[in-house]
Image 1 (cartoon, one colour):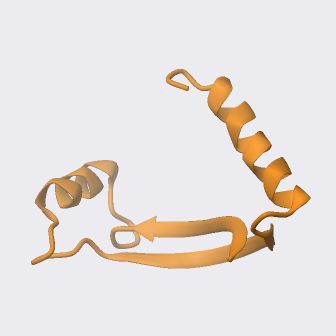
Image 2 (cartoon, one colour; image 1 turned 90 degrees about the horizontal axis):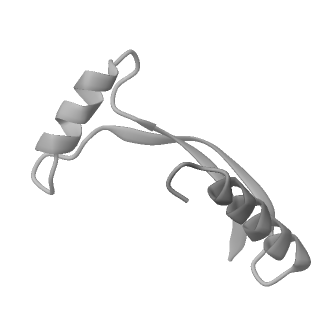
Image 3 (cartoon, one colour; image 1 turned 180 degrees about the horizontal axis):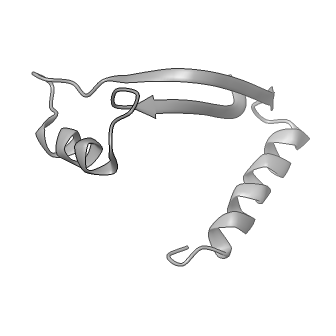
Length: 68
């Protein structure tokens, strides 16, 4: 298993925020919202020092957010 970041595009290109919210409210197993992975960046194997650094950087960002 690897540790990394994936960029995901939800909805169709050009959708407004309102259209994305609407699709979120109406999507389900019968009608899935369009989504695709646009890029993947692997940092390290799980369990490595790089993984710990990655998790620490996420925790720092969360500490600085309004909701934590």
